[in-house]
Picture (tube, rainbow, N blue to C red):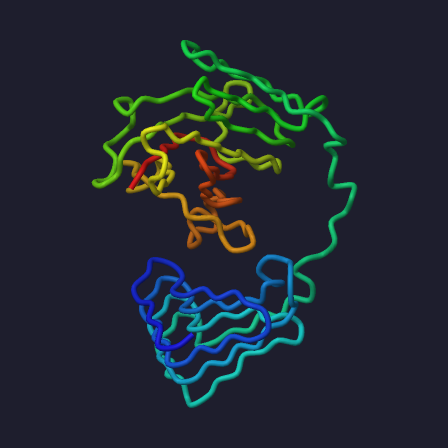
Length: 291
C-alpha cells in the first residue's frame, strides 16, 4: 500500500487485513477518532489463513489520532517494523502497539452447540395483521422466524428468553425524515419483550438476523439499511447507517468508542440478489433504502 491517505474519520482511519506481509509506504493517517491504522493477519482478524503477518512501515505520517498511531495484531511470530523514520506525534495512547494474543481462535467446544438439529419456529404475519408477540421456545426450536407478507423476515436466535414482535412500518410512520438522497424501500419495527419489559439489547447470546426483500422497482440499485437510534443526539434520535459486512465476518460494536453501549453488529450489511441481510443484537426500527 503506497501513498495512501486517511484523515478525520470518526473512528478508525485505515484497516488492513492480509496474510504474510503488508508494506505501508509513505502513508498519511492523521486526526482520526480511533487508531490511525489497524493491521491484522487473516487469522487474528477472522480465524482463517496464515497465523502471522509482517507489517513494514516505510516513512509516512501518523499523528493526532485518538488512540494509537498504528495498532497491530500480527500473530504469535508476526511483527511490526519501522523503516526510514515514520513521523509520529500527538497520538492519544501512543505511537504503536503490538497485541500478541496467544490464540485468538480457540477450538469451539461441541457442547456450546445445543441446537441438536431443532427446527425453526416459523410465523407468517398476515398482510392485515399487527404482528402479535411470539414467545420464544428454545426447548423445541433453534430460533423463531417472523415473516411479513412481503417476504421480509426477522430470525430471533436462541438462547433468548422473552417474546419477539415484527410489524411493517410505513414511510409516513417513521420517527423522522430519511437523509437527503435516499429512496425509501421498506421499513420494519422489531420488538423484544420480557414479561412486559422492553429489551433494548440481547444479552443471553441470541441474535437478530434481518432479511429484507428488495422491492421490484429498486432491484439493481445499491441498497443500505438504516437504524433509528433513539438515544442519539442526547435522546432526540437519529438515523445510523449499518456498516457493510466486514472481511471474515467479524463482529464489532455499533459505537466502538462506547464500551458500555452493548449494541453489536454481528454480521454487517450484505446484498445478494433481491435480498439484503444484517445480523445484530438489538431491536428497533430498521429501514431499507436505495442510493
